[in-house]
Length: 82
Ligand SMILES: [Zn+2]
Image (cartoon, rainbow, N blue to C red; front, side):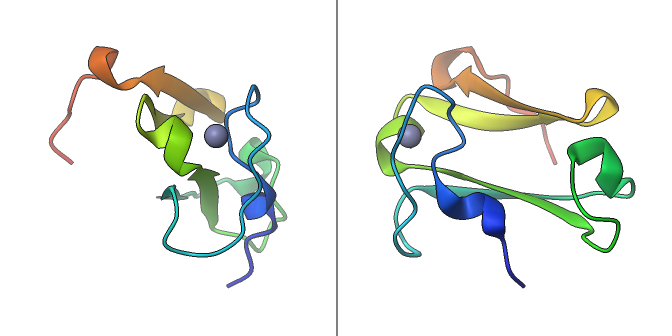
């Protein structure tokens, strides 16, 4: 599957570009309403990439009701049993 959004780090304050798999951290979320996430109707998965530098201090959470990708500090993140 193509994931055009992996072009750069999901952190808007970071300009790191995605070069290859194995660096940073990729987050995926199955979505039932792609439009809410700004995705084409045929795309059923939201995929974002956090570069290795950002991944050391931050992590990604998906705010599904609002279609938002959140960058949260790791120490503040509450781990939920998924
Ligand atoms: Zn980054």
